Amino acid sequence: MKRLFVPRLARVLLMAAVIVVGVAGFVATHARTAGATSPTVVTIQFDDGNADAYLALAMLNAHGMHATFYINSGFIGDSTHMSWAQLQDLFAAGNDIGGHTLTHTNLKPLKTADARHQVCQDRDNLLSHGFQPTAFAYPFGSFDSGTEQVVAYCGYNSGRGVSGVNDTKVFAETIPPADPYATRTPPNPKQGTTVATIEGYVTAAEQNGGGWVQLVFHHICNACDAYSITQTDFQALLDWLQPRSATGTVVETTAQVIGGPVNPPVQA
Ligand SMILES: [Zn+2]
Image (cartoon, rainbow, N blue to C red; front, side):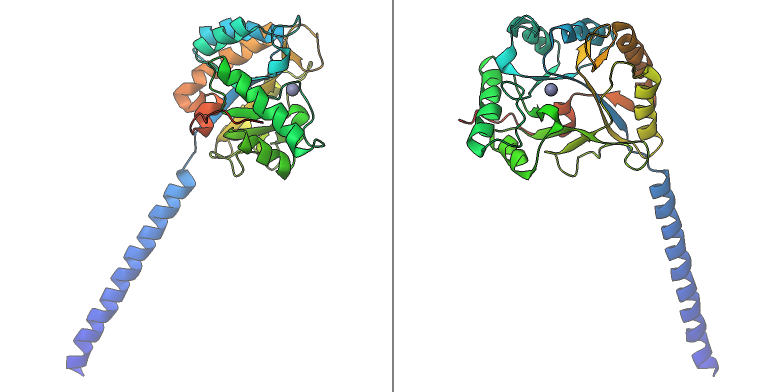
């Protein structure tokens, strides 16, 4: 009995030790998981290349921030859109120039060849002016799997919609996004959307595990368009965002968030 008892005790002690180590390991792992916070990354974006969006440049510069501008190259230089020279200013300051089709066309109903013309030719125009377009935004947020394939075919690394993030279930896009050709955004700020509401999109992400918050603007003006923000409100938003970098909420361009190469031009 005694000869059996000692090894049995040793086995029991060993088993107890294994359990203690295992539980300690589980607790440590669990604590690490529960305590983990992903950073919150905000991307400021302007769709359509509207002339008044050029006002953003000085304000971004003053805050040491860069934005992504989604451009319809077919409209550049007309009376209501930015010029090539203005886009060069944005790019030279570190902003990201992405594509938004030649003429702001709803791609989803188009035949593949026509959709490719709208997306690839727009991208080729931007490349031929020295930009590095890796990011695309779907006009009207309209796309399906075929449209996503066109955007990938034309050499883009990402495609952005205009919805999918809300304050009830989805608090931010993931980094990296589950589908880089279908990235999600909170509701696009409109005339009448308060700065507090826009700030709420950022704090909702911060308080729910972090992630990517794409803030999609169109015009900087006083009620010139349904999708507009005043210069005062845009300034206030940047003033609010700037000090948050100290607590891990940073502003980056789409290209910085998505990464990947600048692909060569693709013939439509
Ligand atoms: Zn647009």
